[in-house]
Each structure stands twice: as structure tokens, then as C-alpha cells.
Image 1 (cartoon, rainbow, N blue to C red):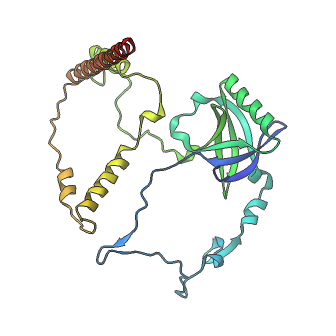
Image 2: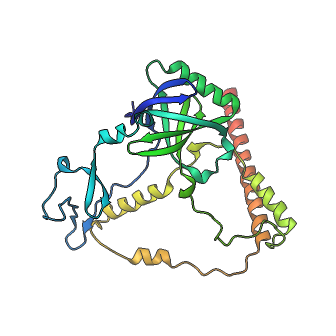
Image 3: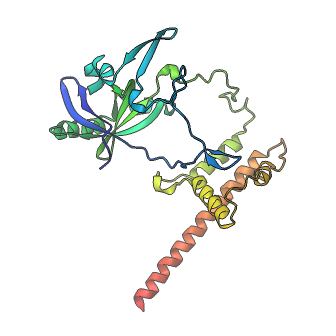
Length: 291
């Protein structure tokens, strides 16, 4: 059972649904140690008093808000809760919207919501109502010491709470130099558009998260294993990095139509090959059954 990060209730109208909040993320990060390249020893980071230079243990560290130069108000975990008890204990649904209205750049971090004791009925009711109406709930929630706006989305049997970025946290794209909406003005021909649509159709399939994996993470592990087997555990070499940076020069003129046609042909060829392999496998299974 994953560790609960927060306990409270979903609130909409007069309905209160006791829930627990659980992380839905699992990141494949490398646990890297910072080293001093002179002797390959770990680098430590100290918590110290900037006035005395003495080390400060964790149990002596408090949070302070600087309201004037070097003047602070000390805040405890209880202060953060007491500032607005209801806000720190409630996922307060403000309205319901169509999910497609939220552009992807606003989504931040996903969490699972699971019903707490006596919350099963209300949880099921909210989940199925969201599914039936094709809506998501937009709510305010305080996690730790920060308030978030969040979207409550039914995914299978669970309600996912995805925190959202505020409008002022998303940069406008006005200053970017992008092609105009008019394809003719962008130099795109109708034939190129038709071929691009055909390529998209050739590459269209169902969404299956298991089809994708972090191949870069795997390649780094292979590189690390290669270095270990070669005994190159503490050698700092820039040769491979320089080799990777030396990319072949590319021309400025791109025959987009030729690339699209070749891509479509390659995809069609690959599909025919997969179909042939599938038929051969079925035929082989049939022969084995007869035998």
C-alpha cells in the first residue's frame, strides 16, 4: 500500500467524501553522487549558521518569513494549518468543466484519490457522475504549505487529482516566431498536406502506455555497465562527448514531399511485413494442431 500524503475530504455542494491522497508518479531518476574530481570523494553540503559558521542540526531549523531586512516571523506546521483549517483539509470543487477545455500545458502533477472510511458511496457516485457527464471537477486544495488549483478526473475505477498551473505560471507564446495558420503562406502545398494526412493515418493506433519506455535511461545503464567491465570507473574522458557532438552537416533545402512519400512507403511496407509474419504464425499453429 503506498504511503498516504494527505487526508481530507472532497467537497462539492453539501457533499463531503473522506479521501486519502497518494502519489501517482514513479520517476526513473539516477541516484548520482556529487564527487570532487581531484580525489573522487563525495561532496557534502552543510547546514550552517551564516553568522557563527556553526553546523545547525535539523531539529533546530524553523521556517521564517522575512517581513523586513533580517526580521522574521517564525511559522510552524500548525500555523500553516491554522491559517485556514478548512482549506488544508478539503478538496473544494468550485465548478465542473469539459476536460478538453484544459490545454495540456496547465497539467502539472498527478495524484490518486482513494476513499477513506465511510467515503466509498460518495466516491463511487462522484466518479460515475463525472464519467456520465464527461466533466472534470476544478477544485482548490492545499498540500503541505501551498494552495493548488486541481482537476479531478475519473480514470478507470479511480479518481485522479492532477494539480494545474495557474494562468500566471504559463508563459505566453506571443513572442515566438511560428508559421502562419495559412498553409499557403507557409509554403505548404495541397499535395504535401494530403501526403502528411496519409502518413498520420498510416501511423495511427491505440494508446497503450506499455508500448513506451525510457530508452535513454536504459542506454545510460548500458554505458555505465560497459565502463565498469572495462575498469574505467574513475576516468574522466571527453573523447566520446566530442564524437557525439560532431554531427554531419545538413543542407538548408529539404524536399518535404519526398520525405513524406518515403515515410508512407516505409510504414506501408512495415505493415505488410507484420501482416505476413502474423499469417505465417497462424499457419504454423494450424499445421501443429493437425499434426
